[in-house]
Amino acid sequence: MIAAVRRALAGAAPLFRKELLRFWKVAFQTIAAPVLTAVLYLLIFGHVLDERVQVFDGVGYTAFLIPGLVMMSVLQNAFANSSSSLVQSKITGNLVFLLVTPLSHWAWFAAYVGAAVVRGLVVGGGVLLVTAWFAPLRLAEPLWVLVFALLGAGMLGTLGLIAGLWADKFDQMAAFQNFLIMPMTFLAGVFYSVHSLPAAWQAVSHLNPFFYMVDGFRRGFFGVSDVSPWLSLCIVAAAFLAVAALALRLLARGYKIRH
Picture 1 (cartoon, rainbow, N blue to C red):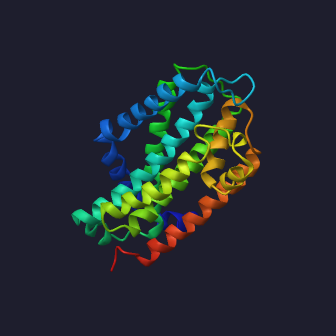
Picture 2 (cartoon, rainbow, N blue to C red):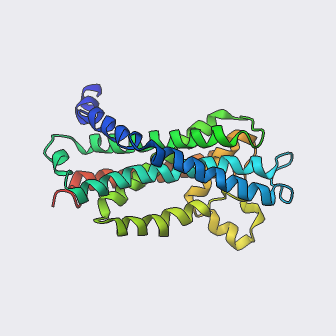
């Protein structure tokens, strides 16, 4: 079993390091800029609504907002890392250097998604460190923070891989991100509790798997959430397994990269 796993993942480590170096060399753009964006969101929404909105008992709006912004940053940057890497490789033509290697589809998946998870967590950690100055936070149930951060980053990194395989140019990638990823992220309860919505919109929100990522992640900080963290865990894990199976199937077929 162990030998089979090693054979499947052979060569993944160099590709993983390449993907890490790719975003680290432009850290000002890939890490610092998203952190600044999240801080601006916090300053604007926190300043306007802090005295007017209270979602959970004893939790100010600014404190409520911080975990949502952290998770949003994790998700968006994990997606951006894997998707942009594949699209750039297609457009520049250097994807051929990977295609001539004996890398398995499991190795491709592990390297691209693994690097996406790292970038997502690094950006999310940066957002948390900077925004924690604006409101007191506590880790009521830290295991949920870790679990949902990893699952969320893994799922969006996998979606980025699928989008990168599908897209042939930056316009297509931008459409995927602007019309699917961003709306689902912003409508996931980052800036509000779904309990504040009308019943119809609450039902729509519960169809969005990103909502369960944000809600479960927030549960780790405050010990309260809109739905059970176990329900969120089941839904997010099932969604991740579904998109991972699709990504692995596309990689195994060489979808849009070997033809």
